[in-house]
Length: 94
Ligand SMILES: [Zn+2]
Image 1 (cartoon, rainbow, N blue to C red):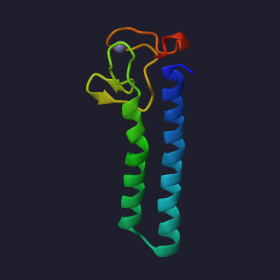
Image 2 (tube, rainbow, N blue to C red; image 1 turned 90 degrees about the vertical axis):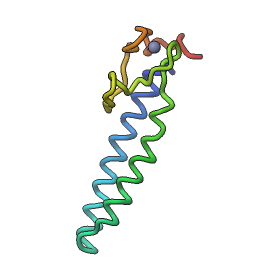
Image 3 (cartoon, rainbow, N blue to C red; image 1 turned 180 degrees about the vertical axis):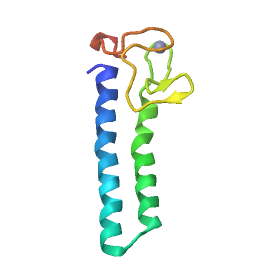
Image 4 (cartoon, helix red, strand yellow; image 1 turned 135 degrees about the vertical axis):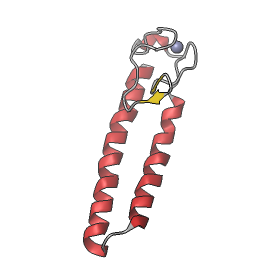
């Protein structure tokens, strides 16, 4: 599997994690009243789940595929923004 495929799988995982975190906050709100603790848990959980994104770096130059310059986006680069390596090419795997 190419780096791009693995990174986009992670992006989808984060979509699911975000939905779950949202549901968790809504459910807690519904049954236990408004809780900033639930919100805090959801945020910490999301940050922990997203820590994996730091592992998706370009094989050639090491640039993270989720970074566009100084910005972080939820979807990975197919082509490395720094060196132009095609990250969707499965033969590029280290
Ligand atoms: Zn690169």
